[in-house]
Structure formats: C-alpha cells, structure tokens
Image (cartoon, rainbow, N blue to C red; front, side, top):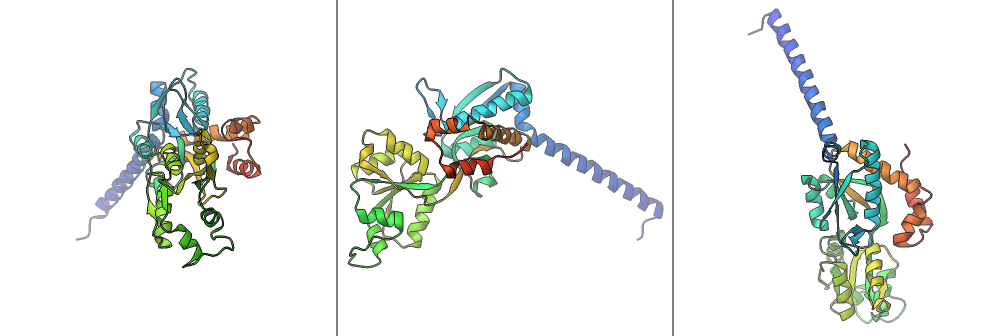
Length: 313
C-alpha cells in the first residue's frame, strides 16, 4: 500500500534528522576516543610509562631501581612535550615494569599510556596497538661462541661455506644440521627462526631462552650453538659479560625491523604529541650525543634513517 504524500515527507524528514543525529554521535564518540589519553593525563597530572627491565640499552633498571635507557630517555622527551601541550609543569611520571609480552595488553587496557622498550613494529601487532615514529632501525642478529666452527660462521654470514670440502649433501645444510639455535622467547626472531628451519628442512633444534643473559650463558657453556635476537640488544649483552672476548656477534641483519614506542590505537591526539617530541629530538643538534650515549657515534646509515624518519611541523 502506498503511503500518503504528507506522511512520506514527514517520514523522510525524520530519517534525515536521525541520520544527522547518528552522525553527530559518531563524531562525538570518535573525538572522545582520540582524546582519552590526554584527558586521563590532564585529569590525574600523571603519565604512566611502561618499560622492559631486560631490554638494554633501550630500557633497564639502573642502580637505585629507576628506569633508564635510550627508549626511556626518548619517553622523557615525550613527557616534556606533554608538559608544554597540557600546561602542567609538575606532571608526574609513574614507571611500570612490564615484560614485552605484557606491554600490548597494558596499553590496550589503559594501565600504561606509553611503552618505552625495544618493540618491533609489525602488521600483526598493529591490529592491537599503535606505534610512534620509529626510534631505531633494528633487526635480527646472531651471536656465536668464538670457538664455533669457521664453516658455521661462514654459512651464517655468507649463506655458504668457503671453498673447502663438505663431504655429504648441500654444504650449507650439512653445516647447519644437528645444531641448537636459541631465539629469545616471545620476540619476532622466534617466529622467523622456526620458519627458516621449516623452509630449509633442517634437522636442527630450537631451544628458546627467556632473556639475553640466559642466551649468552648458553652460548658460553655450549648448550646452544647460535643465539638469535634483536641485534642492538645482542651487542649490549655480549659486551657486558666478563667473557665478551669468547663471543662473536655477526655483522649481519637477518631481518630488518624498525623499533618504536607503543601507544593505544585510535588516539591520534596523543600520537601527535609523541611524534612531535621524537621529531624535535631527532632534529636537535644534541641528538648525535644523545644517541652516542647508548650506541656510540651514529654512522651514515643511522644519520640517514633519522633524517628520513623526522616529520616537519
């Protein structure tokens, strides 16, 4: 049955009003979600920063139990930017120790506003959390015992042994079979290593370790042949021990993974504050010294990385 013309126009106006109201509600909800972290920081005058105590030199506990490290120092630059943005000179910082695995959950739940560690940016994680501008051009590296066979070092660095006799099978596979490889549990190196061993059908053993110190200990006592993990963390862990001369850190990135600070999704206002703080820091004349404190003087590759990462106002 066809509706009367007057009732049809009335229904049309009601649908238009309903649509406009729904649109306004959607915009309001969107704006509210975007502003949630800044509102929370403004109302409490406190920003909650998560950090990983086992991610030297990015984040760790210093003497006196305070957080320190390269990523921690960058987060303190974010705090200074928050003070300017919100007009809160005495903004308090609450440090929360988190494992890398617990960090994403804490960010999603709002129990931490920003995670300051060595967090790789991946598409899978971006379904759950968001990331700042990159803070370091990292990737998977490897550490071996200095007494490891030369053929193993050559296969890992060059993809094949040098021209010396390997009596059976594929030269590279023969060298890698029956070895024990250790990734850091919960890192992207764990998934990468499992995929490589499956692809090349190696009869090797994967023995994941909980942290870098345990991994280095296993290399030194012979329980593991190769330790895989984030290259800058491997370099730091290998250099800190008394037996650093018994270790070799290969000069190779097996993967390329930018690291970043972690924050909540759909919170663009807070993300702008974080990225502005990082861009100011990267542009600063003091940044080479800032970087050198944790990694030594930056080479041309590192300098180019930060020039290309920095955003203009």
